Amino acid sequence: MTAPVCETRACETPVFETMGCRLNAAETEAMRAMAGAAGLRDAVVVNTCAVTATAVRAARQRIRRLRREHPNATLIVTGCAAQIAPETFAAMPEVDRVIGNAEKLRAATWAPDFIGAAPRVSVADIMDLRETAPHLLDGFASHSRAHVQIQNGCDHRCTFCVIPFGRGPSRSAAAGDVVAQIRRLVARGYNEVVLTGVDLTSWGADLPGRPPLGDLVQRILRLAPDLPRLRLSSIDSVEADAALTDAMASEPRLMPHLHLSLQSGDDMILKRMKRRHSRDDAIRFCEDMRARRPDIVFGADLIAGFPTETEAMAGNSRTLIDACGLTWLHVFPYSARAGTPAARMPQVPAPERAARAALLRAAGAARADAWRAGRVGGVEACVVEAGGVGRSEGFAEVTLTAAQTAATPPGALIAARIAAVEGARLIAA
Image 1 (cartoon, one colour):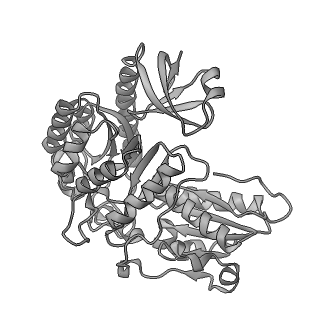
Image 2 (cartoon, rainbow, N blue to C red):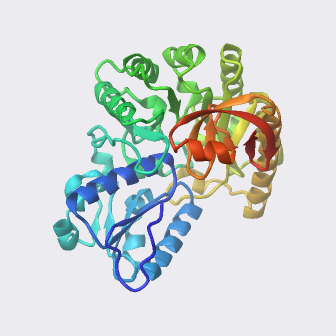
Image 3 (tube, rainbow, N blue to C red):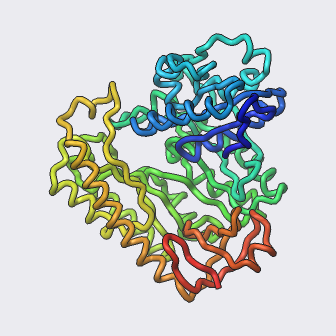
């Protein structure tokens, strides 16, 4: 989200830039609210991502551009990349302050007096953090769907991943707080709430009684009866509990869309990644869920060119797309991160990683095209987003008619009859 550019002076209203995941987007809104309440002015805040080396490079490029656009503002860098490598950003002449992931979620951090007097780098050891999510926001300022952070951090140690070192240990928001927040969002008119976290299915493991995620989902649906749509962000399918799968099978208000953290379709690569599921586990989960809820749509994360991956192993990831019936793919060429075990493994040459990623994307695009074609002639229940676009229950983008756009504000629910497919969108009649 970008505010108007200030070419010759600092901006009165703080500018916030989000890079990376939905959780980062949710946290940006929390920072925006805290900065607004504290009266912060003339600041630019970049909430960075560290999932790949490419994401870190993109953050540095964005910071340089923002400094050119806002030459007089206080430029603050935070997020996972800043947490993991604060010295990298502190060394940039464009940067005035580097703030860690724990510090960014404290209201006192955003007071103008604190910003003015703070050390250039304020980044604590996030592995010492044990408190539950300290902020619960009341919805995005300009989004049609509200994202609610119910969990942060990760206790797993996948061999390719640096995110636990940016986010710290897994910690959960209390169920009562989550329900109360969602009830406030419903009262404000939100029709869809998305539950977000770093490792969503670990929610509850640090709470009394260790409740599973499915218990929270069922509690939300029971105690927020006026919430029309509840959606999950990314989950680890092997950790999906019985209460969660029962809710997905039986509750129409829980959207028939799951994004799965699969990463590979080859068992040896999954072991070398230190993942907790096998290829058969993934296929079985998708088959079972589709049998229980036939309209379910699956997305997945897949990494191409993980160290030691052969062409045959890469082929197993491509065949997983059809075996699981995946529709929406997030494909990443493997990116070596310093300090991770995978970075010390025999590397696949970068051109081969890129080529394998392209094949995965092509296979995924073919699946998505076929799925969209199958929606033509039907009716999609959509939540209206900005720009004349609706988001279907299965997470497809729908281009609404001019009449529908004029008659329905963002956030409203609408039934759209699908007349055609154009590119990556369904087209409403």
